[in-house]
Length: 375
Image (cartoon, rainbow, N blue to C red):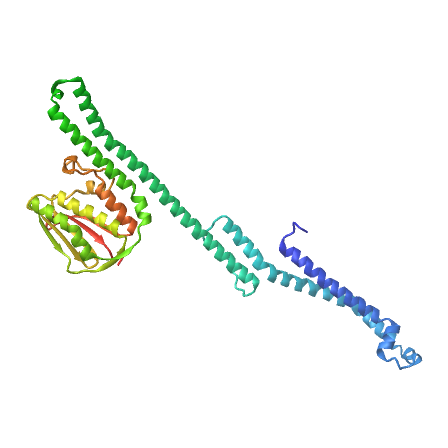
């Protein structure tokens, strides 16, 4: 019986029980049809000779015995029908749950137990549905976390490779100059010229290493900093102050309009670092006589600077670490190609969307920081 399915097993148990009850009932009926039992049951006070003379006992006995086979057959048929209906009613929901849980075991997302009952079976189906949906949600979250970690690890590897490549070039140049100076080859005998150049290269290396270390600490900063409510007019005025002075020395007009103030909830240090890098880029790549505009537009911060617009081919790589276009963004301006990479990392970590696109009036670039999601 262990290998028999639940429907035939339930049917066999139910039918056996009903047949057993029917058999006991018919056996008792047969026993009660015996003459001595029947006589007592009819009327114990009536004399035996009177009962015998009328043959009532024999008549009843014969009638009952004649009806017993037909009654037994009817009981068997009724037992089979009732057992079938009961077993079907009882086992169909269980078979449905078994089939659906089999689909759930194969992780089919559309598997749902549809049991419209309010008893324990219905509660069991609801619990199974809840557990399965929770399992799917957990698996989906784990997949997303796995993908995020994988992308994070890949970005770290790419960053380290790029950093190694960036450091290798000035180190090779410094090594070549020093080696030629030691050997006294040609123009490298003039130490007064090439020692300051070596010092300049080492300063550049120190700056690059500092930027790389700061960038590598971004992951810790993202986890440790808590969000606070910030009034943007005060913060933006404070951040723009040094860049306004630098712009004046370069002959650049810097216009700041913070009249439409609003507050946001965000990690202050991270946001200030990202915004500072954007302002630094705007000042660095605006020529003398140009103009920089910083203002609010509803729930957005707009930073515009007049310059030669950047092409789409360059824009799609501009936020990669150590990327510098050849035309203008070179080492002579002190950039290491990490500024916009840090901006992209911080803004994405905070959940802020942004855009950096060329504009025609005035001719230049516009950086838009959309703060609608953190207001």
